[in-house]
Length: 392
Image (cartoon, rainbow, N blue to C red):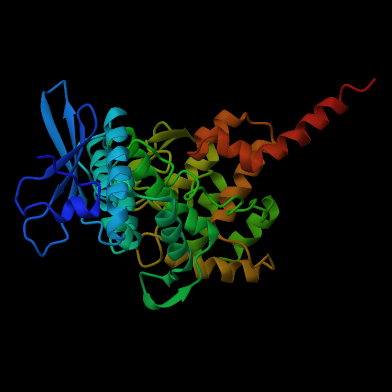
């Protein structure tokens, strides 16, 4: 006697049992329906035959109780066919959630030696993914709508103004901050896609696209005289930090992380630890710059911070933010001046003075593409001057 699961009447006639009733869709591809008790609505399954292993693989499709009874077979068919296509494309048999995809990405980064980067991403996932409803979504069932909704929740979530000292003051999330947190999830999902956990990136390819011009062009620039002025208006410890930022094109955090051991006094070489560039890099210092850093290293142990505050503690963004604003005000400079302004100004000078972009990128610990994006317009000015010199 034939058993039909493609109609409501046919399913109602089925006797309750543990083994599923099967409906063939194609060779090796079946939809199953199981009702263990007469009072149950039943659950749906998909089963695929793998000829390479001679094994059957099953995937639960759930009860589909959110659909009218007469639509459940068609919905089960759609879900089963999507899963069969996933397997045909080489997708993984094991289904994982978005949260598991994030955890797998962090694990792979740690195994590759990117401990610092993995720690940052892990913290972002804990804040913005693991406690969100998107965390439990099966990666193979992730939709563009679900990702769009997550992005909107993230964009509207306030962030702490100073998470280290005050847990009550918040501010609106900036487009740049949104981009950084979206980039973390995008990287995890792309990694899952690369490893076959999902075979399509349509759910997030557009939904997690970065906000354009979120950072904006770094317009605040201080010339040599202005840099000298703000240094002169700063307390001794802050003045040393500002001078360091004015001498080498490092990110403020990277400069603050330098230790005495980072400086080879004999060779005049500064070793910058793992920064956003992802690896150590060495900078050969000019004589006067080497003297400055040598002075900072005097009477300090190798593990001590190279640049320290008056109390001996290392600098961080929370300790330099307000003092820099105060020094800028005393120097009658723009209120938009930050520690990063010094880095931007130094890179601008290197580019406008004619240093090739590859070397600028290497010194700065970033990519040539980023230098071209933010500073390439200065090269056109140099080109104009060079062409002007050709005039007869």
